[in-house]
Length: 464
Ligand code: GDP
Ligand code: IMO
Ligand code: MG
Image 1: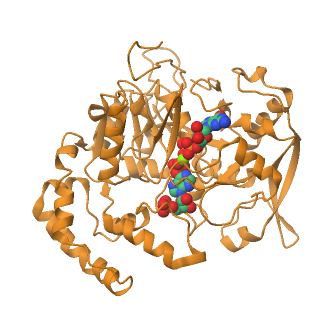
Image 2: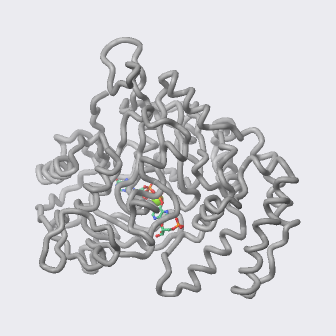
């Protein structure tokens, strides 16, 4: 139903999220016999799998949508009719009326970006954003010197660069781990801010002056900058962990929106070509402050092929015409930096391992329509290295850089599938392709998207 004159256009429920039912059969049950209600949506590759559009669909049924890791390095695209929204820091639930959105303690917050995103949405008619948003007081702030450090380091690394988004993410998480970070709650206490800035700037300014030949960052300027966000932040600051634990206790449907993805996880990804947080499922408990027993479902999102933006090994990367076709048909340009995304075939060795790591209970396959552009589809089902076959994703980057993918070839279908809304509507070859992914990943498909629009998806109700 479209609410007349409302910027929140569609409230159609797709009923994938669990709610604790008043009566009747329960889904996953906790030890206390209660149905667990938190669903996690996370990426199984190197990001940009379409998490934003999957979350947007699920948010129709959610009471809370929460970010738990990363910052504005993310770019989550949601298309609603003619309108496109690219969300970097705000959870995609802000596009749904009545949904409370939390930015958890594990997120790194650039307050300027927070303000810009809120104001941009308000200009587009989303008048409730400020009331919807809650920001955890423990979340760390991305400071101007974090962005400067990120940029300098990437430049000085030259060809060895990581290809970061230059948003200051790594340096901010370093300060968090180094216990010199500035947190959201600190902006309300000038003495704390002054003390923390003094401490942080000793090392930072030595680096800026002595290594990069730059002027030192001014404590007074930074103090003034931080204090200028007090009015913006004051109504939003909350212990979001308490909020979410209460919501889970009441059986409310909570959605966790993963940013980045498992192969970019600082522990489990292709280190050092990773981000500096834990996008994988463990990051939810740490970065949102909820116990693992609260999680009922983990939806792993995979594109029907693979992309990567930034540097680092990518075994199934294509350098031929097929890669160009995928890039063109899939419009594969980064939603945060605009960089061209590297394209390759779906890598089931990596995806299977990442699905197992996250304990995925359901899978969403996105951008299936893009494969209509190719005659033959390949899927990587193994790696060969030094004459041996690996069925496991290697721990070391050297090995990953040397593997040769073993491909299974599947026939394409060629037809336009963007109007398909049931799995049975898909051409047989497309049904076989998604069926193969489902079998290999060992979890049922809950969504297959066939176009970027909100309604261009096949939704399967799984275990609810
Ligand atoms: P995220 O970071 O995981 O949320 O993904 P991004 O938003 O960065 O990138 C996904 C891109 O693919 C966006 O431009 C989406 O509009 C687009 N997209 C999502 N699903 C589909 C689909 O099923 N088909 C097509 N053609 N495009 C899609
Ligand atoms: P979403 O949420 C794709 C990549 C960068 C780089 C590496 C480290 O939209 O899927 P960082 O700035 O985090 O220190 O960069 O991680 N990266 C992403 N790639 N999608 C993202 O987010 C990404 N966020 C970070 O390109 O390779
Ligand atoms: Mg993205």
